[in-house]
Image (cartoon, rainbow, N blue to C red; front, top):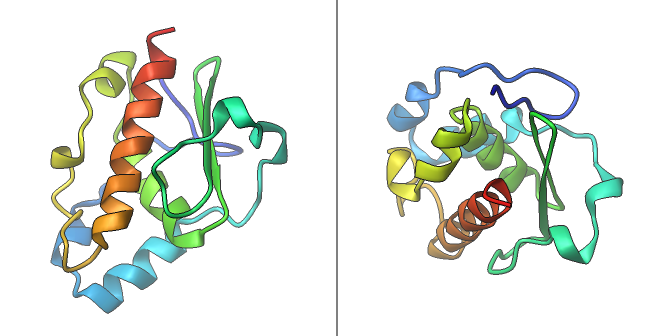
Amino acid sequence: MTFKEVEYIIDTMDITYLDELDPMDFYEAIIELADVDSVPDIQIEDNMVYGCQSRVWVVLKEDTVVFDSDSSFVKGLLTAITSQLNTLQDIQNVSVENYSFLTKDKVSIQRLKGVDSFISKLREIATR
């Protein structure tokens, strides 16, 4: 099964360049990955990811990972993360450690906890 992002296909994109960016360039690159459109129909309590600094929602619709956030930076981070999830097995095996660009000099500890919460929620809904 292939997972897609809202409104456009995210095939596995090359995100290795994110490792080499300094924190300011990293921030700008992540913001550029963010989809500016909101997905209000998933913004309900059952889809909420708890443990995130920003508000985040996630669902699986057919073969699509659909997420939204009130933060462009978070949307960009989640776009980079979900771009590497092409199968259900990928979702079940994903962890923060899979992403070398998620370092404390580029992403705050609170945001890292939020990413971990997002991954946990995604794994939970993928096993339903």
